[in-house]
Length: 227
Image (cartoon, rainbow, N blue to C red; front, side, top):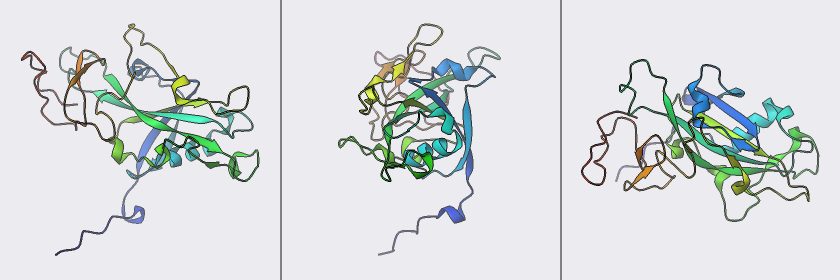
């Protein structure tokens, strides 16, 4: 029986440029990415096996001013932001629309008992989560997508803020997006069901760009657009 092909190492793979957006206390609205003037962000050269832990460390090292001091106990809540290409041809020269998907969160810990970011490490303090090991590839990330994160400082009593406390604002049109894991579904989503939360009926599950979308309930076609 043939052995599986060896996994390509980062030394043998060309990195790509990722835009990582950040904000304190709240996630970005999808419509904020429709403007030519994008929210504050950093650039990260990375690979498809990059984890949420690595992204958090990159942000902490590049933008320490975005974190309170000390930074231990800050939770970073991540989302994937991707273009919704299904209706791009509906209106000529219309700006792209975006969908979002929750990726998880990580917590900055202080194993060295130091207040400096250089000496902090990441620890998913909640025992029911292992989000720090999730990768871009497992999130169905495609080069050109965005990653955004909300920085949640520790609570007044020093405890870690729960991920559920992150603010999710409505879009400028009053239509809320990103309530749950949208678009391409969760890390282990199924190819079933529809969700009417991102600009109309939207298929749940792990859908890749270029796949033919199914017919919605009631026989209504969702069109043949790519996303």
